[in-house]
Image (cartoon, rainbow, N blue to C red; front, side, top):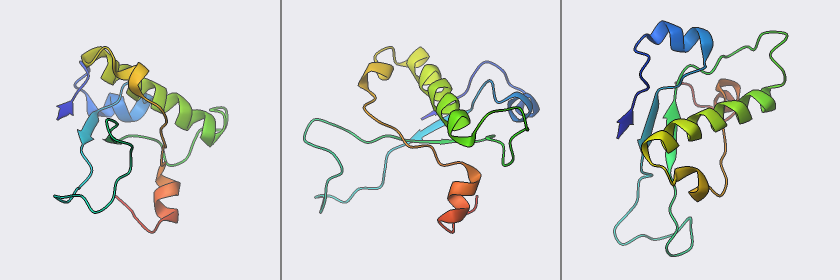
Length: 107
């Protein structure tokens, strides 16, 4: 599923990060699953988003603060389309570009 906000200009996304383009992809699973990430009745959701700055402006706050704000904005966008989404989120992890590089992955 791809959810795009009403702002069509990708340059604006990159410049402001006030809006996000969110794609939700289910994690790869095997049938039958050989392991589980969640208890029965719970699910895992992965959001691949773009346009998180590699280097923050000097007055932008800490990386952790920005990752939290970005995650909250992504959750807000999903909640616009699925009203119960926010209250279903138990936890999340945000990987900024530097975090991905630490894993040896670059996009």
